[in-house]
Image 1 (cartoon, chains in turn yellow, green):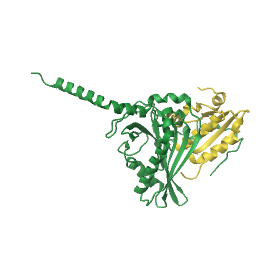
Image 2 (cartoon, one colour; image 1 turned 120 degrees about the horizontal axis):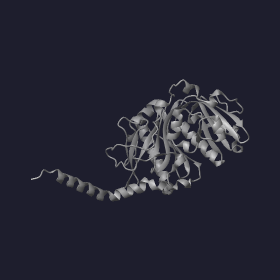
Image 3 (spheres, helix red, strand yellow; image 1 turned 45 degrees about the vertical axis):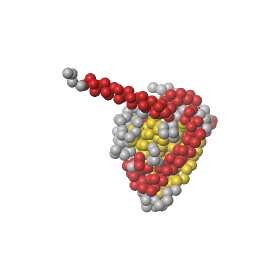
Amino acid sequence: MGAQTITMDVRRVGEKTAVVDIRGDVTAACEPVLMSAYEAAGGSATNRLVLNFAGLEYMNSGGIGMLVTLLVRANRQHQQLAAYGLSEHYREIFELTRLDEAITIYDSEESALNGVVR
Amino acid sequence: MTETAGPDKVASAEQIGLSAREAAAAPPRDAASWARKVDRLQVDARDGVRGTNVAGRRLTGPVQGFGKMWQKTYRMDAGPRIQPQQAIATWREHFPEFWPKGNRFAGALTGINPGDVALLDLAIGGGVKLSTGVFVLYADTESFTLMTPQGHMFAGWITFSAEREGDTTVVQAQVLMRANDPLYEIAMTLGGHRKEDKFWAATLTALGQRLGIGDPKVETRSTCVDSRRQWRHSRNAWHNSMVRSVLQTLAAPVTSLGHLMRGSRSGMKSQPNG
């Protein structure tokens, strides 16, 4: 659990949707970065938040716990949470932890933005 | 630390396809630390525990639970001499030995490893043991995480970790959980949380003593992450291991008699004629 190596860049796509590009290591230590990204994504003004995991390099169980915390926050604001760019390995972790039942996983940014599961 | 939580970075090729890492087909650094995906738990019989209420059950995370969501953290200052890896290695290897008296953790002989299923008998009073289990979701040199199955008191996971903070090592257990069903939610409210706090404080104290800490002090912090209950999961009560354990305890004499009779009947059949 050394120095944080994570970047989360926020892009707005339309009025109500934001994409967070996650690059690096997702651990419990990066919770402040994720929450800052969440605020930058527009907070309650956004109704769909899409997490792009294509740049994900490492995730431990603390990282999964942090995503649950984000999910609670998003649910409180009646926002949908979606994800794409997950490798097979991380997709299996989402399924194992049953996080995929609350965060819909898509194959691409296009399908995530359109809400179409392929 | 690089932290760029600002807006308007332009899309990259990553956004439309696989990451560079995946394209290169290199396994991720965490690959060996995670358990392989399972749909339902499979268990072998273990000595010293009843071993019921686990086989065939699905895992449950905080998303699948019923009650309020809590994050409970139990922290202990292990001092400057203990390294995080040393604390976690000891904890993983001797995990059951640190449990408070009256509770049994029957795991693999090799310690805590990703994908293992451990069977538990937990003292709930009145001479009744709650039989359930846990699944080792994740384990590395500085942390490990246990996840609960259907029927367990709570849906969620417990992460045990150690890290350097300044010139000292801090060891902690952190629970992220919801009570699994309405019955457990009532039980947790009526003393269950307090009992759990005592349980993990006692566990950390025992670990601290094993690590050679003179007078281990455990700090407990509980935060309600989500005060809403998930009523759509109230039917989790069907799997309630506490209710089932009570019924299994009550039925034990009849079950044993049945086993005896079946045994003696098959013994008679196997006797040679004449």
